[in-house]
Length: 97
Image (cartoon, rainbow, N blue to C red; front, top):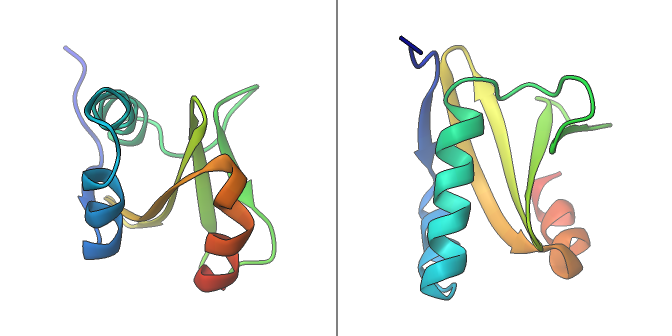
């Protein structure tokens, strides 16, 4: 049985971002977040997850279609900070510095 290693939580900002999306996009993102971030939130191999350089504490990005989920890992908890369309990523990254 595949056991979950990480608990995923959303900040109020990330929650608002998901609620603002079209239903099918929000469902796909939520499924991807659950699939990837509960079990393997760290990048490995050629993955949809990437560690963003020059951030302390470390910042990670998960790709899901045209959207990106930005998050940090604290012990066994993944905190999703923001979700954005890839074209708006630069703007979000400046806010997360």
